[in-house]
Length: 254
Image (cartoon, rainbow, N blue to C red; front, side, top):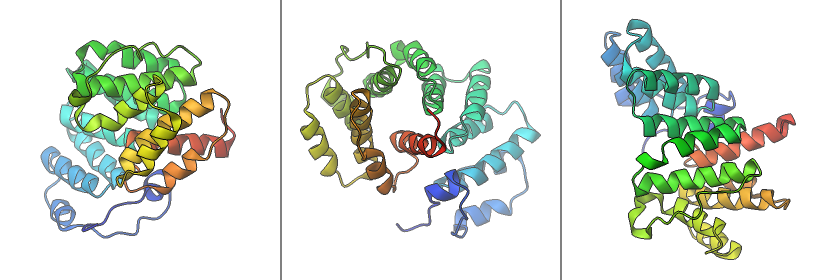
């Protein structure tokens, strides 16, 4: 990569950060600490995946103006990206209370509950905004609602919904995961498509669906390990879910 990026270990596991400031970060650091400039710093840090420091910048902005909707929403997203789920949920709720976009906030609250292992609450959040979604977001909601359903040992009731392949945009891997869960794509077919992916994010979206399906049938697999090896896009939601599952397994939590 042309510019430095923080590793998952530095943002999720307390390991040292070993990269230097980019020019944009350095320029933002010397600006007066106004709400606008602190948001600028947070965004510059986020581009290098330095989410923990971005949270600090957004928190300083909120200390100056607790009613800043932009700082609140940005901090909520970075809390989610670092698996600080309770704080993410709190910020997304406050964002909703002050006019935040319901689809945006509730989808991510659903993800936060999913990462916590509270799958029924996750299902509720995803269900609550399905009617607001365009096809691109609808397939994301179906994917995560279906996986949460399998985790909760419930019927994945959204799988009957049809979303045209050409309408899902960049969420095509979510659609392939859903197609597999519906039985339209075989296990071998999904695996081959995943392994053919040069993009780690698309790989993780496909393989995570396969992992949850196998788990729901009592089949052991090494797919979490495989997903976490391909970590260029460690911050994508399927990779974060895999990271959180591995973390719980190491701690002996359900």
